[in-house]
Length: 503
Image (tube, rainbow, N blue to C red; front, side, top):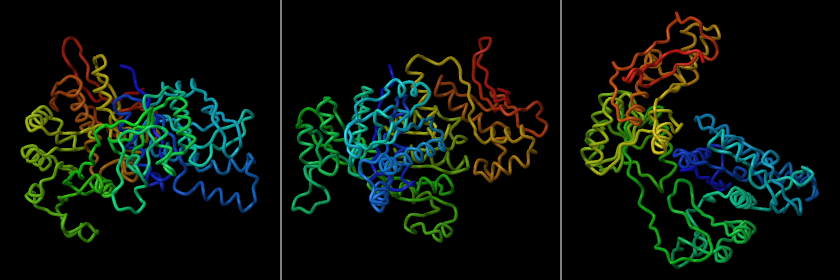
């Protein structure tokens, strides 16, 4: 099973501001978490291209000037770099290439050029080191290396061209509408517009004016390259290909009902994401200790509660548990699964000793217990482990599982005192108010328990794992010291440890 390649193009209508970059990251992770590769093509944020064009117009710039093309193309370049920075922040392994590095060449009018070739090998080689390559759309270079633009909506053309050149398994144009409709969904009419499941390139040319660049559709047709049009996070996509097909129309499901337990740093972030997608999620309740505090913070009084009964009386589809404690979280997990409600959690301490029972209970009820963020946060460690297991088996586990501990180790190696290093980690938002789990190795040990269960179906107890704590007396540290978790077979028995190692 080889990794598949998906070209995902993110348009300006989706990425209006830097705060929208999370939508692109979610979509990228959706495809990379199972081991596939993503080439992300990015348009400028919001109206940035129009703003740069207006600035050039104030100087009466020649439309064929390389400097004008360079100026206007800055919007896409900026967006690609911002997406790369956002990806790094959440632990995604990405590489950002500009048009020159990617070798995207084009010919014709400088403001409406046609792509002719790309350094396919360079991009392919980049995928040997990262899971996602990010490139700016709309911009290319001529044979002399000067910048050119691919016409209005040219990021669509970039995506189609690169998808064909790389023989990608999917080219998806991600827009602010969830597919192609038989008429403009925003236009008034007596009957609602119909979302199309499949449509030909020619028919798409007729009904998608303003949605897809015509040049991109023409290139797709000439190369017999199928396209998809969808919006962020949607499973449904309109397929554009050789013919119209009378495939069954997919009905948009109602919003998923989500009960949120905990509204601190993690829970508050989850709530914000849920609020951004009212078409997909309906928050039914928010379980907290201090109801009045959250009402004063502007949380809807009809949602916030401190009674567990309220959570389940409203029959959510999913319980998103974001508590810091163990006992309360475990109680909620059992109550939810007992009522056939799926559970999503990042609470590693609450699940690390009971994954077998939780998964069996979920299977009996026909629901899910999902815990990917409990190990690695936004880094898809569990998904990669499952993929590796499916593709050939696993013999041992070893890895750096906590960034907090390694930040502290780095500061100790630089000469800082342990107390100072902890304070700096807390100020950076890496360490909790009580950092004892990170310092003792218990945080990494809990993650190792989860990974051992995923890889081998083995339930480790905390006593099975030897943990070396981070203490003021650590000697011989240098800048590459790391807290390394290991699970391996030695002498016929499995051994688990969390130790400080000089790499």
